[in-house]
Each structure stands twice: as structure tokens, then as C-alpha cells.
Image (cartoon, rainbow, N blue to C red; front, side):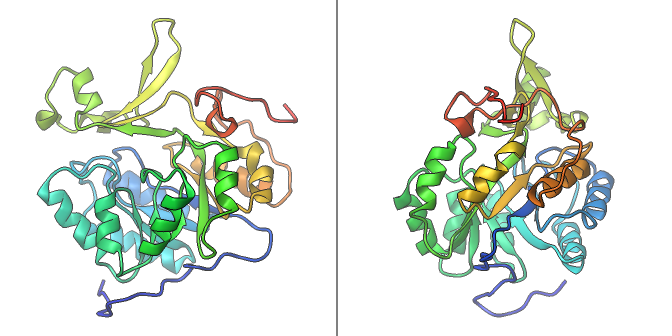
Length: 314
């Protein structure tokens, strides 16, 4: 797919916060190591789902190369044809020179908005293209949010540990052209390490990992001595032990003028999760039986992330 030669870019959907009371639904990047066939089938189905924005690309480990850059761009083109806004996501922890070379190519594209997940991506995009400040950018106060806006950020995804109170405060001070997107459903991306948790669990070195995380298409659970699921190992990424579910907080988000709710892809039932959120946002009732239980929402309420506060109608 050819790239336009212009040095600056005006992308569809950028700075287009709707005036009516309506939140968009986004499909975040896939966090797991799936096969090329699984990824392509997933996005072929996603083209028909009621999502407005789709994030594409590898954010966890550069060794996961099931799809080439050309493959990702082909998927992006098909989703764009289906009426979706496509965003290309970057690694949260680039380590090698080869990672930076790939990052430069992503940030140089003139067709799609980029989600910057570390400051090297922000640096490459500053003064050139608008971008999304991803959840792995440490943005906890208005000064940082304003600074990111000056660099070109047009949407930000608050770090998953921020409470509704903090996000609400930042909403009152955010730059006028800045959209806010909240991680609303899925296993929370908590941290990244230069070491690989999956390789370490199998007593092998990271450099000889054999991409064993592909055996865990939804991560590998990590339990306490009391047999409670505490975390989920996903290569170099550590996730929450149970999914976050903010479905019943969407009313509060609407009152806070949140623009987008993000659903994180899982191997099974992502389409149903999307439909449940879409129905809730449109004010209709639909069964929630397929949503995973237990779930957590502690961070939203200013509590430990694994906590579960009941909804008003629980």
C-alpha cells in the first residue's frame, strides 16, 4: 500500500469529539501471541462488529512476528474500508535497535493515527503527526496532559490504575481538542519487564524462549498459595489475574464526558462483549452471562485493582 508523501497529516476522526452525548467503542491491540491465521480471522470478524476504532499492532514483545508490517497494513486497509478508524499501536518497551527501526517505520506512516506507548514513539511523532498517548505513557496530572497535547496528542488513554476521581479532575482541565479513552474491559496490562515471565516459568532463557507464549493464547495464570488467581503472565507483560469490567460505570463515564471505552481482545467472546457494551451505551438491555466472572474494578473506585465493588443494581 503506497504512502502519501506529505510531511504533515490530517487523519479521519482526529479532533472530532462529538457534541452529542455518545461514547465510541474501541478495540484495543491484541496483547497475546496468536497465529497469523487467528489474527486475520479475528479482524475479519471485527470488521462487522459495532466498534468505532480498532488498534492494530504488537505492543508487548518484538519477537512476536506472526504478521509482517505489510500484513498489518493490509488488515488496516480492510478495516478502514469497513468504516473503522484504524490506529497503529507501538511497543511499550522497545529494547533493541531493530525495535527502533520498526518504530520509525510505524511513526512515519501517513495513513493512520499512531498510538505511542513509550516516549521514543512520542519523540518520533512530535511536530510531525497527531497521535494517541497510550496507557503506558505515565500521564497522571494536568501538566503532563497539557505537555502531551503540545507535542501533538489528540487522544489519551489514562494509565489503568487511575481512579474515576482523578480522571474526572483531569477531564475538567484537559485541552479542548483532547479525547479521553478509558480501558473498560479485559485483563489489565499492569507492567512490563526486560525479563520474560513465561520463559522464566519454563526455566529457559529469554533469548531461547521458542516463543512459548504462543501456547498461552490468553496468558498463563499465576496463583497465590491460597490458590487464588493473582496475575496473568504474558511474555514480558504482567496482567491482572481477572479481567477488569467497567460496564456498569459507563453511565458515570458519560457524565464525565469520556469519549471512548476500550475493550481488550480475548480469544473467545470478544464479539459478545462488544455487543453488550454497545447495547448498554444505547440504553437497551442484553444478557451479561457471557462476561467473565469474577472480574475487578478496584482502580476505578480508588481501591486495590483486584477489588470488586458491586454495581448499583448488583
